[in-house]
Amino acid sequence: MLVPGLKFSASIEFGPRDSFSFPTHIIGFKTDHYIIIDIPSKAREALLMRKTDNVSIIIRGICNTKLGHVIAFKTRILNKISRPASLMFLRIPKHFISKPARTDERFSFDIPATICEGTKTYHAHLIDISISGCALFVAGENELTLSSVIEVESDVTNLIKQTIKYTIANIQKHKDGHKIGVHFNQKIEMDDNIKRKVLELAVNSDSL
Image (cartoon, rainbow, N blue to C red):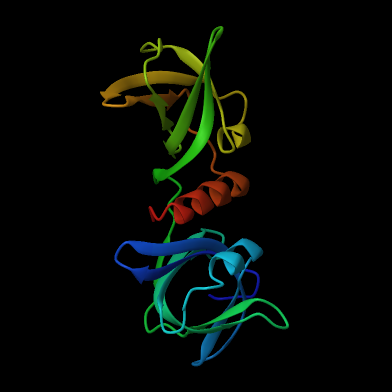
């Protein structure tokens, strides 16, 4: 399950309202002893003056399986070193949580997006996606209407075939903007590129 190079999202829990998250990957492990993860440069700088020994850490990631299993575990930091490389040693967890990511699942996250309707353009956030549709959030007011066909540009939708049409299925008014529900004219194929992208986004947003 844990193989070198496997990418993860790590969240160190210093206290109830004090946590620090960073992307990392598995360097290696010693069975029944410890797991070694990489500390990227930005995380190294942020943690320079923080005590991390015996602090709780939550790890979430995606296994390199055909189905794309999402795994997560909570453990404690044994120690960290800066030479010969910036590494963190974690206690082997007692329990792992693992579940397959179903292709029909709705994945939640929050990434920048652009909505185009005719000559109008709106800055938005893509907040979830499934094989049959997606949802976006537009801050403030807009002139989008039900049943309109729109274009959506984002890191995720740019991976979807251009033959897919996006139709506004519902509009929900919120205090600070509008949630736009979008229906695809046909179910999209969750190929490996799309699945890995949405899984990584969902894992990093802690929604899985």
